[in-house]
Image (tube, rainbow, N blue to C red):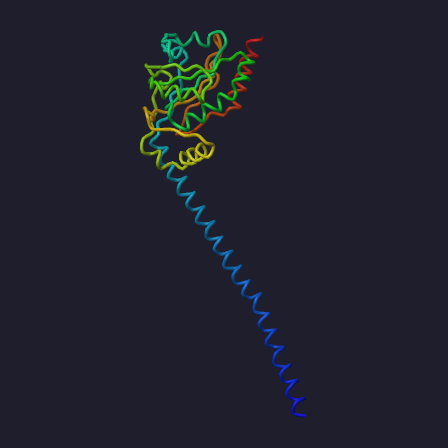
Length: 252
């Protein structure tokens, strides 16, 4: 009788112990999951706050950035441009687009990875521009010798020197220390770096550049893109569409 009483008692005690230990696991997992969700929520909020503050600072720096003065065709036409490379020639800018029109990249600094990125993207349009018989060329403000040779690895058109810097005017726009406060600049640098572009700090890189699409004859300046910050690229589709419209107008 004693043996029979001990055996059920032992069985009866072990059952609730197992059931209690198993039932605690969902509570533990549930608590950890709740804490994880809270951490993710807090991280997301902090990220949004940081981005908001960064955008706010960028907006404040816009107050110190001068508005672009739009280029005057007659000034650009009379600008003297010098060829680069082994043969040094001088051309009046108008002769480069008077019959065919042209796409012109105004380079901020040939050694800049952001300028090289934009040069490569414009060069990707070269075959389509050739089909339209629209030349592509670039303008720099100083002849840096080997730096231009390196730049030409990314840019497939001719490169000229504008010593008068008319293509950067009529009002030159500069970006100084504010570049370090603009989240857009850091995004652009990270984007170009991830794509494999590299650069250096040689030359004057503070004067902002841009891109022009200039039509033949009396069509004038059809597209004018002015950088608002480092790495502010022109819309490549807009360049191509403008070049096509330009040639459609000539065909008529």
